[in-house]
Figure 1 (cartoon, rainbow, N blue to C red):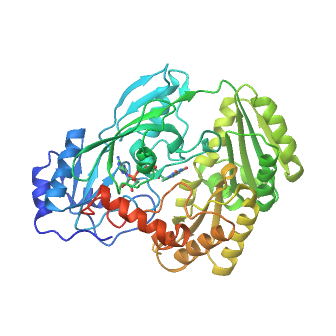
Figure 2: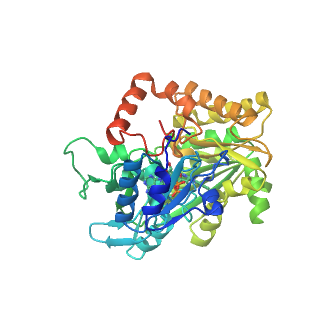
Figure 3: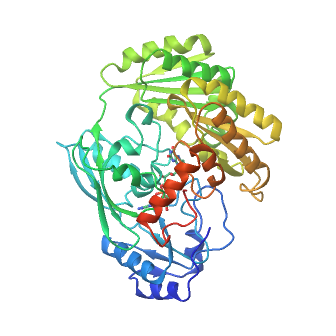
Length: 456
Ligand SMILES: Cc1cc2nc3c(=O)[nH]c(=O)nc-3n(C[C@H](O)[C@H](O)[C@H](O)COP(=O)(O)OP(=O)(O)OC[C@H]3O[C@@H](n4cnc5c(N)ncnc54)[C@H](O)[C@@H]3O)c2cc1C
């Protein structure tokens, strides 16, 4: 990371801000996210913001003293986006964690950035509503981080990613000015869409201090299917068959056999005894059972075993298998999490390509995927003392990216570029696009103090 050189500026900032820590343990905690990346040093301090004023003050001081700032939510990112090194100060907004209002008629929630994703859903459900973007990390990640990474999740295939559920934002710019983006109406085309630009900008353009979220009516009915397959390509073919059947499951998740075994080992379940690959599907709404029937017809020719349920408790157990896949693998070693996206009808080719990469590079690749939108998470697991940014793990990540490109896909579906995927970005977006993106960054943050070296 390239922090600005500064002479005493950090000290001046940390002295003037209201709540700060220079405790080495807190700085070390703020140095890392959940990507497994270990930076070579720790930030100079942590500023804890409890209000918009705290953020404004920190950024005004950062501008005055030319201090690099790393915005931080819950620190669950998987791309090194909130990792921080010496010469930078972390601006932690996790204490700004209040739900300010919920309007059940307009179906909107206004929240501070540190509110956890699951807490928004718990509050919305009191009104028969839900917030659709549901990362597997829902219980531990913040809305500000979700906005900054344009996070996705299981329900996104049907309801869209974060960008489709954020109506407006309040953002503090690098110099401390407060920008409002978007609007609180469902439609609106006045001016350029700065709301969409901010979403997914990985803390490089401004610090999100408030978000107005779009809520949706909670489906009254859901129907769940757990299908097991002899191998991963058969499951991927079944997923493509569901897309071809022109139904729209709310959830369609893929887990390969090795990951399933790790989930079983952690949770005491026995999924892996039923097949070497797993598809979890959920249909919802008034036609849930009808759609479930079409879905089962589409996948049965490929499956070895199919379980159907409309029991909420059993459905929750099946969904838990997917939600726990990443923690289950993290018990096996350090995990480098890929996040490639491919056109949905190329899922089977992607799964086969990943198996080839594993064979060629000799690294073990576990695969889970949001099958309905073609977003795969190939995961390389290495020993606790091995690097995920160098050596075989890095080589495998590069190969995965090239595979995605060959299949007409993308480097990252939902985790972002962060620090760890930058070297492949230009190849995907092109030199002209990247040049324009750097110019946009310079308009928002002329001194380059916001999350330098991340995102673009
Ligand atoms: C077990 C596990 C499962 C996961 N599953 C998913 C998944 O299904 N889908 C998915 O999309 N992700 C998933 N993730 C990744 C992660 O949870 C998301 O990227 C999440 O959006 C990060 O939120 P955070 O609050 O932890 O952000 P952080 O890690 O704190 O920050 C992430 C990025 O956002 C920036 N940022 C944070 N807060 C703000 C703010 N208020 N203003 C401006 N910038 C800010 C940071 O600078 C950084 O660049 C998973 C992670 C784990 C550990």
